[in-house]
Image (tube, rainbow, N blue to C red):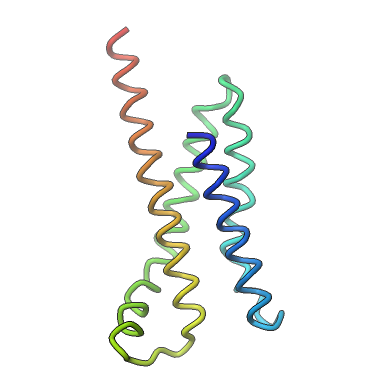
Length: 124
């Protein structure tokens, strides 16, 4: 789970930096994925310590949930774009959609990990 968390965080950092660069360094809000990716990556590294793993993964899950909820609206705009429609800021819609997918995947794996941990504790 640590590796998935670190990779997801790095993907969000790269997404934020790429969005910021592609905006011509004009929109600091393009860095929002990176602002989520930095602490998620740090929590992934922190989770390598077994004593801190539980809290780090719960922290990551909270950040992933917040990131997912904050970016999910872009997915609707993406469907509109794919259908040939127009949206106000197409680049923002694409970045939000990618962030929603990354956060959703992190959340999925976090829930799976929590379920496995609970089952392991109950079987002991």
